[in-house]
Length: 341
Ligand SMILES: NC(=O)C1=CN([C@@H]2O[C@H](COP(=O)(O)OP(=O)(O)OC[C@H]3O[C@@H](n4cnc5c(N)ncnc54)[C@H](OP(=O)(O)O)[C@@H]3O)[C@@H](O)[C@H]2O)C=CC1
Ligand SMILES: CC(=O)N[C@@H](CCC(=O)OP(=O)(O)O)C(=O)O
Image (tube, rainbow, N blue to C red; front, side, top):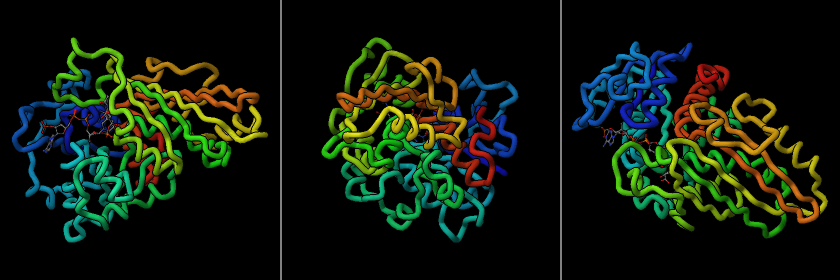
């Protein structure tokens, strides 16, 4: 299957290049940046020296006028672009007049993750101009949506914090174990690569120090709430490390739920997955950095009825690029972990 990446010079784009270059079934044929990009015409392995030298794709500058033709040339199209750009470009690429019947788009941005368009506009500060497409987009939380992803033409790959948070929340919420009136509390810390490659004051080396941000108004809170089907209190933090997220989710469970019930909920939910790993000790970001895994560990106090769950992922991989490839694998009838482990 022929694949291409838009935004290949960015942090998640480069991780996609690394995975697809070695993937047994996808052939990476084109890597794109914007028409005016400072990185246009550079070799991707010169820009990101962690890539194999054999990965010698030249970054091609493209604009909206090129999309119709590009859509006919690829089976799998990965968008590692800013939200506003993905929002328009996914719609252009999926124009039914130009689309190969089998072409599928995997959008790493937040443009199509929230189905309620008023909630979306409030979180992203721009309206979704393509409600029909938004309606068709499938949320790519791989372990929870195998079948819908297999049949999707547009997959909205989840955000990094929502991936870590939902992996902890969903086994409990879907089992109806959450105590009445309990609003789960999620505190999560991300490395600076979560903010992307473009230089900014907040991610500059001298400025970064462990700190909360986006308190009670981060755009990932409504994304988590929609897909967990519960309200949450989500507080992100920026940590002084490069990659990884540790999310700690605290919730109260209904009376009568036992430690075994909790263990069964997680074991059953992730029995099929080689990517979500139920651990025997508290996960660390360094143990998942540069891997596609999501590590999970919990402790339940039946007397207090309090459950604390820690999940750890690499924000650039399970939080973005490797989950996008998990979705592409499913969409092309491959095992979800093909080319990832
Ligand atoms: N970083 C992370 O941990 C995660 C990121 N995401 C999402 O994935 C997407 C990519 O993120 P990330 O890789 O971090 O971002 P980066 O800032 O590192 O990369 C963005 C890429 O988009 C390209 N780009 C920027 N503006 C335009 C434009 N107008 N037209 C075409 N291309 C453009 C850039 O190249 P150039 O400007 O040179 O053209 C670059 O290749 C974002 O939507 C982000 O929200 C999702 C989950 C986790
Ligand atoms: C540390 C940091 O800045 N993280 C980013 C989240 C990155 C992510 O998941 O991206 P989406 O934008 O695709 O949702 C943030 O808080 O905005």
